[in-house]
Structure formats: C-alpha cells, structure tokens
Length: 363
Image (tube, rainbow, N blue to C red; front, side, top):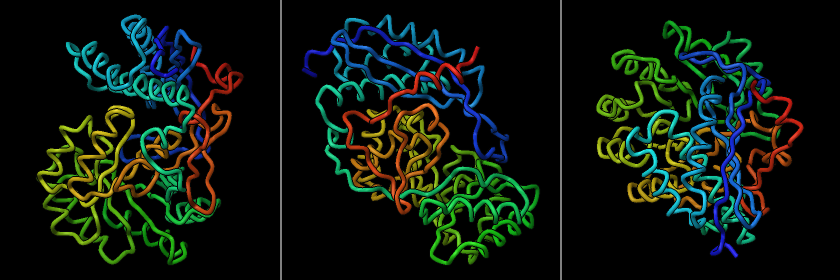
C-alpha cells in the first residue's frame, strides 16, 4: 500500500502552550512553547504529522502559508520520503533552506516519514532498521538561570520518573555565579546522577576557555555550546584543552556544517535538532557521518520523534526529554526508570488531541 500513496494536501496550525517550568537561558527566557503543527494527508486517507518548535508566536503564524504553498507544490506526488525531501529542497532553492524555512522543510519531511511508516504498519524506528529498546534520557525541563538554591530544588524535582541525568543552563554575568549554581546543584544530586551544562552560546572565546577550565573537577558530564555555534576553530581549542567533553550540534543545519565541525575537531559529542538537521531524512545522513567519525549522537528537543531516530542511530547516546508538547498529544512519550520507551505504534506515534489544539491555537 505504501508504494501507492499519493500526497493530497498539507495543513498547519500554530499553537502556543504554557510550559510547566519557564526556561531562562543566556539568550532569552521562554515561558510558552510556540509550535507549528503540520499535517500531511494522502489520497488514500493516511495521515502523517509533525511539529516545529518556532520559539516565537509570530514565527509560528508566519509559517502557515509557507506550509500551504508547499502543499500545493507537492499535491499529486507519490509519497516517497527521499524524493519528497529533494522536492522540498528544490521548492526552497531560491530563498534557501535556512532559518524558519528549515522548520517547514523538516516538519513536512517528518510527516511524510510518519505516513510512510503507518502505511507499512511499522514503528518509525523499525522502518529505519532500528531496535525498539529503551533509550537513555536526561530531563531538560527547566533548570534555567535561577538562584543556586532554586536550581538545586528544581534539579532534585527533575529526578522524578527515575531520571539519571539533568541539564543546567549557565551563562551568568560572571564565573562565580555559574560556579555557585553548579556546586549547589551538584551537592544536592546523588553521585550517580549525571549533570550536563549548557551555555547557549553565551561566551567569547577567552571567557569560554576560562569558564570551561574552571568547571574541571566539578562533576560535569558535558559542556554544551559555550561559544557561538559555528565558531568551530575556537571550539576545537577548548575541546583540546579541557578534559570535560564538549557538546555541540543543535544548530547544524544539515550535514555540511556538521562535516566542517568534525573536520575541525570542534567537539567530543554531537547532538541533532530535528528541525535544523533536516527532519528524518537529514538525521539519517547526519547519523552516518557521525558514525564514520566515531561521535556519539544525542538529540535536541522533539523527543517524540527523536526517540525513534536514536533507536536507528549506530552511535546513539542521550535523548533530551522535554514535555512541552505533551498536552497536545494523545499518547505522550513514556519515561520509565529514566529511559525513554520507543512507541510500538505505527509511525512515530504522535496524534493530536483536537480539543487541546483548539484550546491553544494562536489567533
């Protein structure tokens, strides 16, 4: 049946969902998750879906006509995901698949793979050749810029569900402020709990070298994006000088930037963001490149789909868990003993709760 699927239409709905724990980063504070829900319908009645994390309500609204226009271009085309990915790239060739257009391209690509897997009657992980064993997950819900005591309290609360790792945001005005919160959280957490930290590109090279060096011996599992995301030369110098592993990659827009980062030796680990890496198709390409360089791969956001993709990634590492879209999803991703359970339903397993979509829809 999958070989005979034909795309009928695409549609998109912008929503904004309140976050249980606001996320304060060095860049901005996020209190609501602005998402674009994308739906793909085939002539045969099979539906695929995905969402883009747009950060700003205005971006989510602005992308609706872009999705609809792309749907007109794809209508009548066979649902062959790798061919659809090429057609999407061709459609956006003149403006370029960059910025918010990457969100549209990736979401439609993911929805196409979802529909394709549903037609085959397989979970996406199995369709891609992966197993459905549980995936290690760290809790990334919150732990933004806050006082040391508040961060310690929140870190402790984030262990609910059996999580064995949490991520803390850094990038305060001075090193002492960052060290104080790291030590407060590390002291509160049991020794067997991993603590990742993320600077969200807050630092200059000199300050990044200083702070990353100062974090040595503080029980940090990895240091994420201390520098501007594409400053691979300086990132490589930090990776060479500091024993704590360096993590980058959420801003890779396809495999070309990733290849440049790997060539520079810019990190010890890599992570992929579904929206930026190019959806399911882009992730598969990037996963192969990571394996060829023996780099472990973690995910950035989008846990509902990323859990399937990590299951099919040879060098899979950690899944970043956030619950921001849970209220919109009929069966949210399950976490058991700190492990993400790969859904055994056909496709990636997400289906919208229409009453919630109506409630949170942006005007």
